[in-house]
Amino acid sequence: MNSIVNNNGELMTTSKLVADYFSKAHRDVVRAIDNIECSDKFRAANFTRSSYTSPQNKVLQCFNMTKDGFYFLAMGFTGEKASRFREGFIDEFKEMEKGLLNTDAEMTRLSTQGKKIKVMGSEWSKFGHDINKQKKAHDKSVALLIDKVQYKLNLK
Image (cartoon, rainbow, N blue to C red):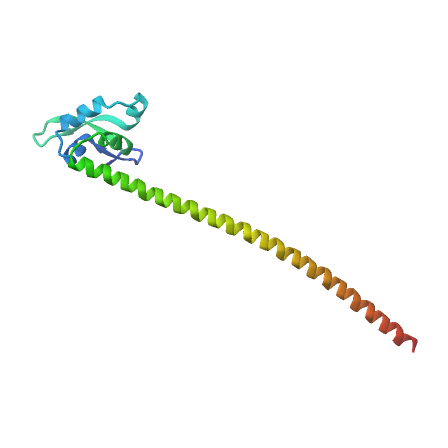
């Protein structure tokens, strides 16, 4: 199905393109939009009246609609193409769900891994402090030994 881009850069389609794609009479699609049961807010955000020029050079009324408006409308259609569209829509949701579940599992794994790394870092930090303490004690013992040796050498 062809689409159009409105002034905001949003992808849209028209009732004429929808009618052609689903092999429906355009007047039936326009009537379906006119009779669609949705809030005024949803209608205003997703359906705008427009026009197109027919092959007979007549200016005819149509609707421009957003992706959400198209989905809302098309979910109510019947027929083979409409059924394939709904099945495809369901399949896409399943794929998105898998992706989200995989992302959640990966986030959990990374969070657990991060906690383990933090614990290991803390343990290494304690180990480093212990090494520094032992090194300082060792250096102090060496210095004391050198002082003793120097003292004894000075006595002789």
